[in-house]
Image (cartoon, rainbow, N blue to C red; front, side, top):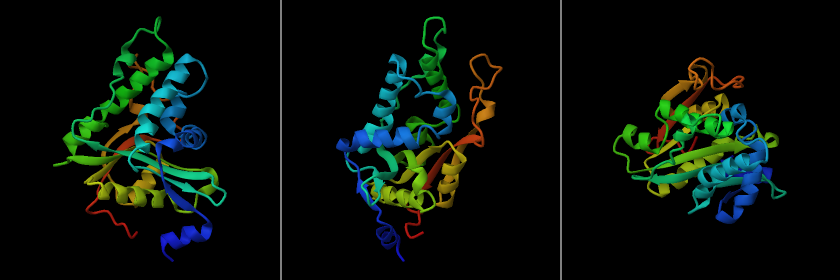
Length: 246
């Protein structure tokens, strides 16, 4: 049975996302992605409802969601009741595209700057420390002009075990190839995302153990609630070598 027949039989359809889908996708991520994603969960980035929390939520929307809903770059899995049960969000990056630099927040004095924003800035220092980001991708991937930057892969708790993660990767990789990307690039923050990327042919480009990254005092660990997750890994696949029939 082909994967398309399998999901048709299960009542699952796949939808290319549009900007108008943003509210429902944000709701799905707030329920199924951020509470379990180890970096955001450990730092409690999205907890609370004050001005600072709302500002961070806006940054998340502006950087991790909205750009991914443009130009048919992302896909959702929808069950027979019309409910989103999985998403793969990403966007195509061309040379010259820079990441927002928020590292300065991590060096601000705590007596006059919100603690959560200081943590946000220091979190960006963590990713910088093992060469994760658009700038590093163009330096580390040979002869790349355009790549697909995966932002998140999420499967709702009730839909796990159906192979949706793998299918969402395959479908968005096909989009990336059709739009002229040579590679797909992502930071895998959990052991579960790393496992599925490894199974689908991604290779580790860089890695940083969580317990080696210190807080600003240089003595205490920055991440305090990582549970089973040991490291963050930058992973990469060359689309010319990706097996779309797996």
